[in-house]
Amino acid sequence: MKKSLVLSVTSLLALGLLAACGTPATSVAASSSAAAASSSSAAASSSAAASSEVASSEAVSSEASSESVSSVSVVNAINGTRAAYGIVNTNLVARVEVSTVSSIITDVKINETFLLGSGDNSIAQIVDDAQLGGQTVETITASKTDWSGKAVDVKFAKFVKVGNIVLTGAVRDAAKYGEIVVYSNAEMNITDFFEYVSASQESMQWYYNQAKTGNISIVKDATGAAFDTPVVLGSVQGAGSLFKADINSTYWPKNTKYKIGYKENIADIEKALIGMDLTDKPAASRNDSKEFLIGEVNTGATITAAEEYYNLAFAAFAGDSGVGVNYQIANTNDVDMSEVVVDADGKITSAIFDESNFVTSVSLLSATTTAPTVNYTYDKTGWDGSVTPTTEYHAQYLKIGGILFTGTPRTTAFHGEMMQYASTEAKITDLFTYCNTLSGAGWYYNALRNNDVIIANADGTSANVALHNEGTNFKADLANKHWNVGGVNIWAKQTSKIADALVGLSLTHRPKVGDPASSVSSGDLGGYTLDGVGTGATIESFSTFLNLAVFAYGNVAL
Image (cartoon, rainbow, N blue to C red; front, side, top):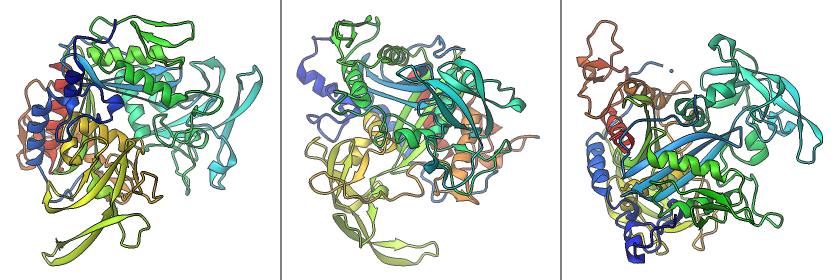
């Protein structure tokens, strides 16, 4: 099946279908995300609802929680963003996200993270002593066969903590699932962690999210005792990052030996899918040069797992995975992400939330920085009500997803933003306006997640100055300091309570929210209520996160 030839170039530009891999099309007007032409009204109403929930402070009290793709009988939406998780190359957890407008794919994002027990850049692998920080780490040694057929010994950390689960490793009797070490937890009846993770969309989502938020660590023993200095994870030591789409990943680079590397292969698949309608699932094939074809379209990709990525893209496109995704600006000027897994009965089985800092936060620099800056002065109101004239310095240039933006101070704040960033290259006059669309918000969030946002010089080269952050630029991250008490990320705890409360619900109709004072039932969790049931969450922006989940749900189950 060829890409539709009925659509003219003008039509494709209008829909944003020429924007490759989530990058803003250089021909698209900045004030609207062309890829979200049919869904911008939903984004606008969603953002309006979110804006009404802006909290003056989040410092409120809190308590310090199958098959690769299941068949889900839902009505597949022709518009929206969906995702699918799966095991690829036997021992990697991949996530493929697809956005559509009128059944035409407008954006594709492919990424994957490593599991624990393979001998190739696994998370638990001890690549060399440099990652140990001078500490003694208990290890186990297993043997693998390398590419030349030679037996090679590989060291692994014996104890690994994923989320709240402490795992103990042992050499497998025989290699299985591409792994030579098996991790288990007897108390939780986990005899094989690979099987535990690969069992469902929910379990793969959970594992992928633990890796994404920095919640996997090598620990001292079976109690989960932490090292004084965090041990560098094997995938970071051996491949630069836990995620292959990360700008810092050194996995299979393009060089003199390889004409295209991992990232180039993935980009070729993503670009080929954009503009397609997969309703009839075009056949996959290979030509004599081993290039991957979708129908009659030659992607140019030669990567072995191309068919697996394509199958996941189709599962996301069709809604078969049951994973709905939403991105939008919320709480005035944060870029939020929500994701829900929905079962065959339309009930939520798992949910996650995340929130990234927008450019006024990440671009904030000191007056003595070596990077090019612009500045503005405003009256800063303190906690005691005092007003102090304050000058802030911000990066003049940001490079986001490979696109150079130039910043200028606004004369008045716009949605809490005093900096306006524009790109001549992408014809974006206001980055905030662009990101206030489903595709724009998703593009920014994922660029930041992949470390593809940098402080730049005028020529686009790196200024070698770190982005401003609160430990990290994502509030769901374990190390984020936005709302952290005694080393505990309270923001993550609070949003996890909301996610837990959504499990078992259908969001066809938005549940009624009650404030914490209305929660009086015996044994109730307290906090904000959903249809009278306490959730335990007291975060002031509770309704914002419910709205985010409703929109994610609607992308897959309505």
